Image (cartoon, rainbow over all chains, first blue to last red):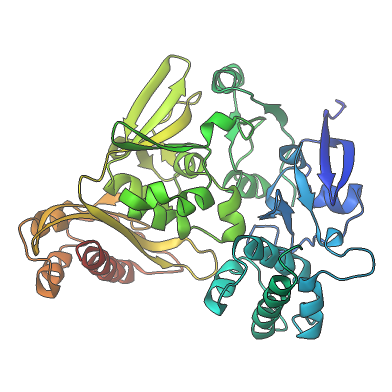
Amino acid sequence: MTRIKMTRIRMSVNGVEHTHEVEARTLLVHFLRETLGLTGAHVGCETSICGACTVLIGGRAVKSCTRLAVQADGAEITTIEGLASDDELHPLQQSFWDDHGLQCGFCTPGTILAAHDLLTRNADPDDAEIRHALEGNLCRCTGYQNIVKAVRSAAASMREAGGTT
Amino acid sequence: MFPGEFEYHRATSTDEAVRLLADNDGAKLLAGGHSLLPMMKLRLAVPTVLVDIGSIEELAFVRQDNGDLVIGSMTTHADIAASETVAAGHGALAEAAASIGDVQVRNLGTIGGSLAHADPAADYAAAALALDAQIEVLGPDGERSIAAADFFAGLLTTSLAPAELITGVRFPGAGGATSVYEKFAQPASGFAIVGVAAEIKADGGSCAAARIAATGISDRPVRLSQVEAALVGAALDDDGIAAAAEHADAGLTDVRSDMYAAQDYRRHLLGVLVRRAVTRAGS
């Protein structure tokens, strides 16, 4: 049996540097979940439709099931585990809680990170812009009304806080 | 779902990428990966070698060159959709880019990857044909340029040679014309059931020049020459546009039919979208 060739990759995940050897075909979502133990990025449809695997690469939302870990070599990645600081939830996490933006929670990490990408580009989006930005994230239980409401109120509290998050 | 096993190479220059493609039978280029990786997971593509061009930064750009608009092959849909330079003269291209997939897909998918993949419902294909794009490629024998009309060769097939890579896409200056893209999207995938790109040059209230192309209709994008001929010299009012749009599916023989849309429905949509696109571009 031939030995599988491994590729060394280095990336920053939630501000922590990681260096690992991976098989070239390892998907980023599996690397995050299984190698780094960050299980907040979920494996949903696996066909880049549902958005449950969404993470931020350089601040932009991407679907980590459609990215090889080797393609993310040198990248700065943020997962849902990287949003809260100490004991304080990120405003998006807090508003999803307050506004009932989740039920089963499966889509929630991806939805919050896609909303994060939106709010870094547009601090005061209207409902249509929020819905457009979340087009790539499917929720199968709560529905979208409270998700949109949560993003709207998170945007308001982030503006009040001076956009520092 | 995992892709099958493959050997991975990261090219640091276009010359190195071409050499790796030429030296390895069964090698495929990896751009944004948003067409190739899903196909590899389904084993519809089983490349033995992947040549990743994602770190060749000089392939990601939008610039003007002697009045032309040139876009690097690794420029993402998001960057094209957000570019004021693109929107200024090439609205159909900006609108096509903005209509692809969703935010996450647009953040990684690239124009070069999409063109090379040649999906029969790809949005860029209609814009490239309507805007008379030239696909600039580099291969073992050097550079060449392929007109969009000669580039799309059939279902998922282009006239690219195996060891050639797209470096950029060149669009002639708009010359006072306005272009738009209209699309009826499949609600789950976001792919075009039918998409129409129209470039119209208006002179007073009438049409001085028209280029119109559609995607989703056939195994490759199609030019709607009969609509163009009917438009030139005609009034750009409701009646004039409706009369020209009557010709939308004239001469089209192999209109697709699938579980999303029967052939008759696609023909109907084509007429509706041609009317909308010409109305908007001509106003």
